[in-house]
Length: 305
Ligand SMILES: [Zn+2]
Image (cartoon, rainbow, N blue to C red; front, side, top):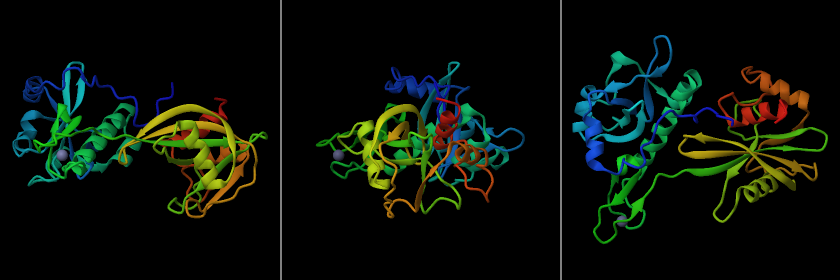
């Protein structure tokens, strides 16, 4: 199994008991409960020495709990409850300066050890979802959190609609030809020199293979077949699941959709290997950094997956 950055979390998410509000309140009150503090989607991280989540105790975050800041259960680790708390809208959104700095999750994840990135990913996606879903999509009335943060319910007696955190599937694919070349493209927003795997959201009523075929046809006008799943990656910006695939082109001629892509090209295996190795060289034609599944798919292909 390939465990990419943002996956591989260590928590027991306690799905079977987190709906029990009495249990949940007891967990929040435990002396050993730990809280990941987030402010405007940035996470409080220790920056002296190793970059890690700067876990705070229930006592330390009590003023924020009492001010009704959003809290979600991340899960249990060795029996200890771990939560994430969003202090953005509190009176002190920059609290705990003595315990670290608020880092953007992407840069924190690229510097911290693997499980740390998974914790950040879960917390960021969940807290962002709550911040955006204060009102019912059915009737427009306010919603309130339930189930330790894994559901919101409409307050209107006539509606009571339940809303669940979203995960949006995105296919991301390396396309090969019969001569061992790989097709990569660049969007206008990419840094100069960066080429990556083609990607796009799965649409309603499509399976993964169909989404891969449609996206490749739309973006570069190439018919593909033999779509094969490789691995997947949670991508918490805000809440995608990147579904990595390999597929083979039936023809090679590129017809670029210039609305989506600035350029797309075939690269040889040697060129691709250099692009993976040179990901950190701003002057080079290169792949995105190792934290991205695009980089890891290319690495996987180069080593013979
Ligand atoms: Zn409603």
